[in-house]
Image (cartoon, rainbow, N blue to C red; front, side):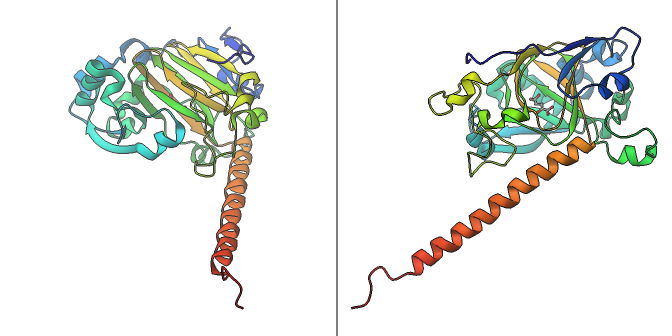
Length: 298
Ligand SMILES: O=C(O)CCC(=O)C(=O)O
């Protein structure tokens, strides 16, 4: 892609001495965690075929696009993005026969609400990091979001953005490439350079980055790695990520709030507020311009 400095992502193997909570407590950067979910039933049974066969007649919310192929440029991608309900079986068969051209990606779907037995195949990894252990467990639960289910074909991608929450993203089936940039390098991914994109999106199309337009990207340090089935990615709030499926793929992800997540929200809200003030001021001053007589009366 580009010749920026690739920094190896830390890989932490379960040695049986520390649990996931203890490991996360010492982490303030992304890491790939290995060997923590070997006993999950999902790892041995979840495949696209499993869902097509057992859950094919169930409705699922899919992300699709008004354009084909789905644009990879972030502004075009967001402009064309649509959500619709479809049968899980039809969606998977479409992905299997047409890949990306089917134009469907199941993203952060609430599959466990309608099919609660699926929760037995995974385990909640929430409430893990950031808050003191004396905090009441009810409050902690309120600070966790529902787990998300992701299923997509090889070649589908998510444009570069950051999220406000803590994130554990678990690869259940297939493989995905992740490219991460630290929030300290936001300027290198041209944060706030596009007035039209939501604050959390970079304007760079990471599938074919235009280095003449975005030259700083070329030298920005990044993690660029593949997440394999059975591995967990810990992604702290505010970290930029571009994600590309290298095969048909299934993921589960867990988002939760922490003090760092709240700080990221404040930053996003501040930038959004500032941006909308500037827009208003700009509109106001251009209105004044427009109201001005174009030539002075004689
Ligand atoms: O897997 C993907 O396509 C995107 C995942 C993502 O953005 C996330 O887990 O925050």
